[in-house]
Length: 260
Image 1 (tube, rainbow, N blue to C red):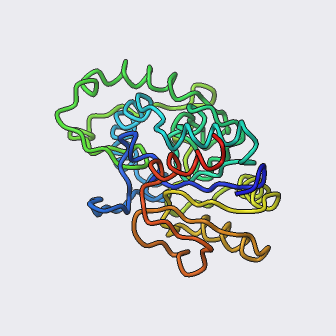
Image 2: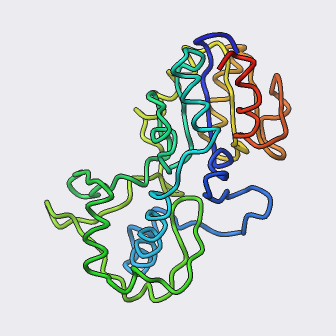
């Protein structure tokens, strides 16, 4: 990686060392995530999602960046990385100190009204949820999922928050299955790849279409592509270099080669 010329794309595999599970990693449970259509069209789905999402967000909020996140922040600070595009919604790159971060799939730390577009800090919505659902502060047992959702019993008792501006439907500001990435956000991510001389993909199996599109953009420009991931990815046959290993441990190993 030459100085100041590497774009980085990260997936769930970089956050596993921070205690956040991976959808597709070894041992990951099979599950069917809620779609945007289900969330918007069914009050029972919304209650179940908001109950689990509240508990999941508190776990995300308590998570700390690991060596992989911190190393990428240092590489950016030292001019080796020109930006990070992440498929994660945990906010750990920003928490680690990275400055130019595009969260392709949104952030668990924001909430948006689907009617008026008002955006809220997740912490303020969490306070309302805790006040309206005191039983949820001590859930029986919790299984957290990579998108910040969690499996919660008694979800049918949950009081769903609404928009304090217009009374409309609130949604965590993340891209659900069946929902499109905003055009301007993808263009921002594509701009990071377009202005780089190499692409590093860390902790992503490249199953999601957004990652493949960025990989193809890099390949069209004939950029070197380095993939670091445990197990097979959809980009392996086209990578310049594939390292089969954990994202954070591998980044920690190669950083000294760059003088970091």
